[in-house]
Image (cartoon, rainbow, N blue to C red; front, side, top):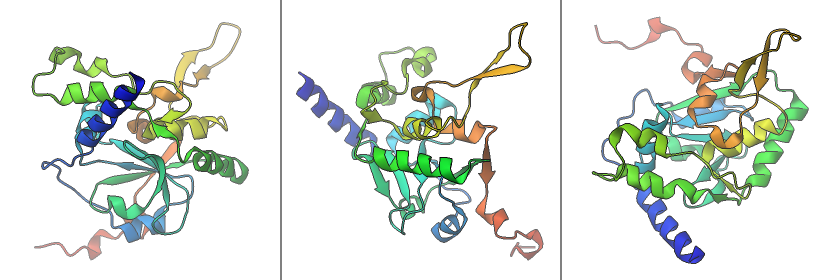
Length: 238
């Protein structure tokens, strides 16, 4: 039974990985500019063009459907990411040359802690993708899913919590949490005996790609601005 379930999950994963015909890129950053701007430890958010991308963007109310970790490896192996079919793997920036992207950079993370985060991500390579939610994603994409439209956003809880598996954003969240670096913690007011707010670290399985964009502890880096942008030099049509 378990083997049959895995086979079904893999078939559904292949279905979800198919590209759609409706994706429209806007302001795509060339790979050369991305490579020149990225630093080890950065998170690269991607607006994907696959069936699973549409589902994740809808369910998370976000532009971003995928997150990859920049490890600073050689060209063709700069990223560590969780792929639906291949699991956690090493990938190249060129794979996203045709897609909209955003760079999110952790602020104030010292060299030693950064190395720990990179080591964590490298040690995760080879882990399987968490297929727990594949059936729900396929059900979401059906023309007439057996779930009322108003409940469709609630039917997916990302991640199974199995430490041997991963999805794209949770494995990155795990890496930062391993050095106690916050991403988007829940905020609770302190008791009468304490002062200020208390940050509650959420479980890594609850993170989605957009959380790195929303995080107050990650800077948004735009390669066009980093490269000395001057609007007066733009070749605009009069």
